[in-house]
Amino acid sequence: MPIRLRNYQGPADLALQLNFWSSVTSGLPWCWKPTTSPRRYSQERQFDPRSRCFAFEGDRLIGYMSFTGEGDFVSLGYPWVLPGYEGELQDELYHRVYGFAASSEYGGKKFAQRFRRPWTRQIEFFRERGFAEQRSEPIYTLPVIHQPPADSFSAYRIENTPEFRFGVFEQLSAGMLSPEDLRMFARYLETVDFDFALIATRHGEPAAYFGFTIRRDTGFAELIASAVAPAETEAISPALSAAVHELSLRHARVLATKVVSGDPDGRVLVGLDFRKRTEEVFMFKEV
Image 1 (tube, rainbow, N blue to C red):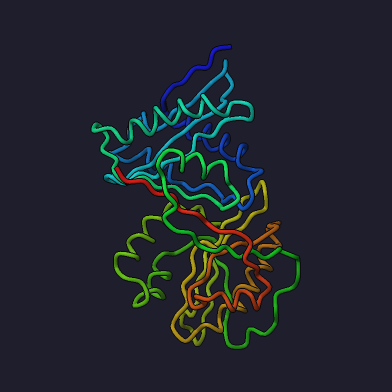
Image 2: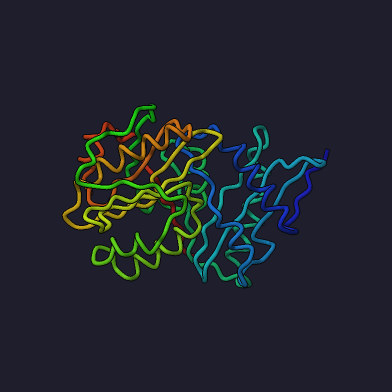
């Protein structure tokens, strides 16, 4: 049966893309919960249907590739395909999607993507096409085991909230992050589908703030955003202990994080039995 390729046609394709991505990435180690960036990008003025290409065999979706962009910066997706369709189809998807992104018509100049270190196939695919590893960051993980929350919260009050409030993150990060970094975080964090946030306060004032996601099909949870006030490093341990308890109630299996604010060398994480297990790899290409 011949393979048919087509570009984005409407909102139903966003659900099609999400379901396909979740299926083909469910077996990849340390794979994150999908963000809302495809939906957000589809509503922006710069969006073009050629930024998404879908491959069908009959009525069955067998692959797709997409990108999101802002100005001349492009977050370029990987050409995901079903097992057995690797190779030529991926080349064609890449040719169409990257080719349009890098064209004078669209104007992409800087291309980036992130992977986990064990995703060697994805990393090599991009490396073979001129991408280089820009940097990597360690990822620490902790098995989520059901246990009652620690009762030694005398110095801090720990509360869960159903949504992440960027204003709290910004307040605690002021003076530690530059205005440009805060703007970058604001753009990124608005695309994260947070499951809950956790705030630690002392004497009624915020001391630490954390935002978490949970990938329901795999139980993989991530601490995505962290902000700790100066001199409040002691808030990290009780807050993360409370978070693990909450995650266990939500059936998460493992919690992953990069180094958290206030603990740049990971000592607090290691003291809580987190272990460095992998890395996040950032790939970059400029034309």
